[in-house]
Amino acid sequence: MTQNIHPSAYIADPASIGKNVSIGPFAVIEEHTQIADNCEIGAHAVIRPYTKMGAGNKVHAHVVLGDLPQDTSFKETTVSWLEIGDNNTFREGFTAHRASVENGVTRIGSNCFFMNNSHVAHDCQIGNHTIFANNVAIGGFVQIDDRVFMGGTVVAHQFCRIGSYAIVQGTTGLNKDVLPFCLIAGYPARHYRLNTIGLKRAGITGDRYKVISSAFKLLRQNESIEHLQDTEEIKYLKQWLAVKSNRGVHGFMTLERK
Image (tube, rainbow, N blue to C red; front, side, top):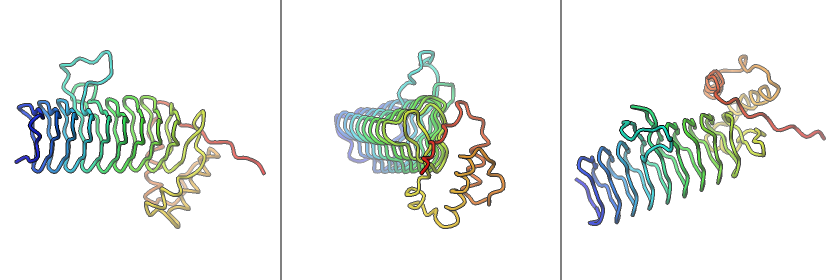
């Protein structure tokens, strides 16, 4: 059963709509879409074919989900997907495109918040609890892990990776990878310290924080972190560093001498 569907909304057949879904005026739900229970679709929102959406998502006015990749070589007959988890918020004007390759997936996790006019390009992989401020735009094949904060008007080049708990200062341009747990800013972008507040809010304090701090200092000095205690965070950091980078990793800000 569906509820609260405005009479001016268009819902294609076939489209799968879960229970307790509200759909606002002039919204468009196209064929081959799946919308799970308790979602809210705002006025003039458009859900394009091959979009799968989990439960409890809030889609505000003029959002477009699952449109064609902005790739001049893409063929519209290609079957690819946009898959979205649960309990995300998509504010006005947000856009996300489906993947550019056959059976490929652009993936957005759960409990994320995307502010006005931000954009997720084709083939991107977005983790959980991530926040995009207004006008953030990321290119194709970008990977963003859990609990990342992207400040206003941040842009990321295609194929970049951004590690968990990173925070990117507003207006920063990224053309290389961003280390987990760090703050990054500047022109060109540079890592300058740990995301202390974000880590504290996530309960990463005490010895868990100290070992991350030690890792950051070693990486700044271009030294190995292999001998550090294998906390959950250090295991993740080692795995992240072990992946071959397509674009290299942003460097560190120069420490001021006093």
